[in-house]
Length: 436
Image 1 (cartoon, one colour):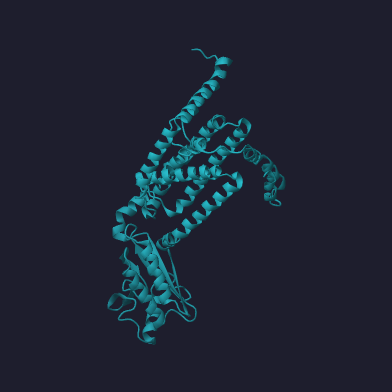
Image 2: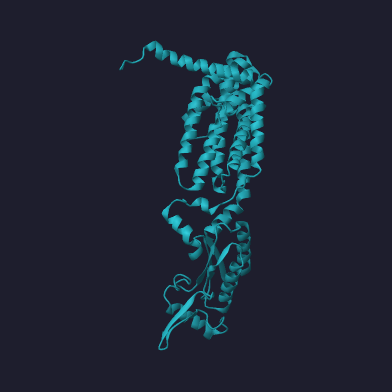
């Protein structure tokens, strides 16, 4: 067996072969840019069509690892023993104790309201006034088991004293359904994961809080159902923040490039990547939870970053060469190798999350990996991206003045030096205006 190392000329020839392949690829793209744009447009329309069926919501089962032994056991017996998705309402008084007709009436009304809420398991609703909470007495006649408020809802102080004595007499009530200082009582309600309307639940609990809260009583609501109801309630605000972030990015791009091309191309690349990724999720029925939207925003920012790098390199080459097609070719040949390696390394690194057994993490891995891999054009011409699609649009754009290309090409180097020299001192933004 020949174990000798390859000759130096053979090793030196490999980079030349890769460069020739890259040159052929770039020349092919530039020669057929219209066809590639048409292909990307068709693919975008395809993903836009499927994007209509995308629903962003919280699926509680996506938060559990379905193959775990505990989850399997829970799935098997939850219809018998109830849901783990429990809502807790606390009724707290500021003065006195909860053993008053007014406080117990509030507890009873909230208990009844929860039992009428869609998605609740009525057998899992329990409170101080619910018949399910028992008073166990041992007498000479035997063991008596009756509701805690038996025989009826309290009407006078004697009935209230009897209920208080029952609470103190039975272990497991005081400290769980009633606080040790007797100033708060809890109401528990289990909700089915697949049957709970979080928007309706949020509205119902807000109504209950507004109705039952007064100068001496405060209503608290907690538990996983309410947590995700709040998240869904803030979903429009999340979209607003994302919109403000997008507007800030556009302003920063204009501040950096000062050209329509420098703004439109990176933004278009980010929007295109987002449409493809969300369309991919809708196509394969991958649930998108509101909690993971921030991850998609971060990956979109990374796509914009690569597009900005591509545009900056193009402006540098255009300043040196002065001809658009040659500048596109030179910039792309210089960026192709690092872009190819970095994007595919990032994409497959994200894809490693797919080994997780939690569906929400696995779905995030597939969507984000597709998002990331789509951020640059690969050898298989999978998509038209920041480093590929940007030059296409550039070839149709008007000629950029050489002085503007010079301003952009010289932008990053002095600014980087200023940022390093002043960090973490005064802002360096005042130095940015010296290049215009």
